[in-house]
Amino acid sequence: MASLDDILTTQKNGVLSINGLGQLFRGYIGTVTSVTVAASTLIVVGSGRLVNFSITVVGTTNGFIHNSLTVAGATAANALCAVPMPSTTADHPYPGIGVFPVNAVFDKGLVIVPGTGQKLNVTYSLI
Image 1 (cartoon, rainbow, N blue to C red):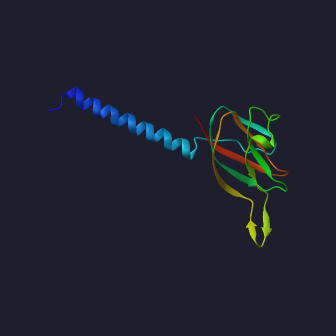
Image 2: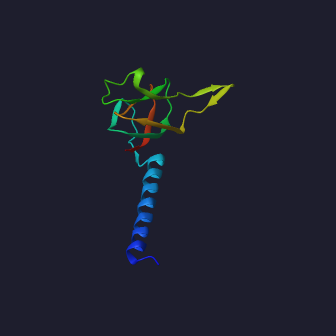
Image 3: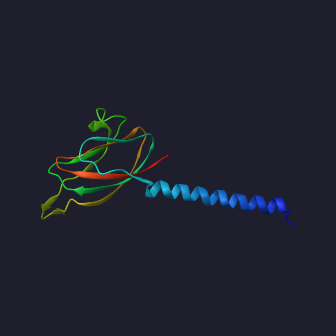
């Protein structure tokens, strides 16, 4: 027969497992949404996961989201993803506004460089 200590240890282990799953889930759905930006901006410094970005105002050129410690350090070599401008061609209709999944890991920080006229924000989790 199990002792009270065994039962309590089992209960504790169950709680720890559930908490760990909750933290893992939050990392994949994002825990922070940035302010909406219209100019190159350092959003956060640190490691984490870029969950998605949301375009609120379309632009006339592509923007980018970078894994960088500074705005000046944002280059093509550390771009996590492009933020597309709208396209209305028949083979690729794209309205330009909406939420776009990314699911990319960053280890320095997040810098948003919007395209001309774009406004957007990002949802991310820190590790």
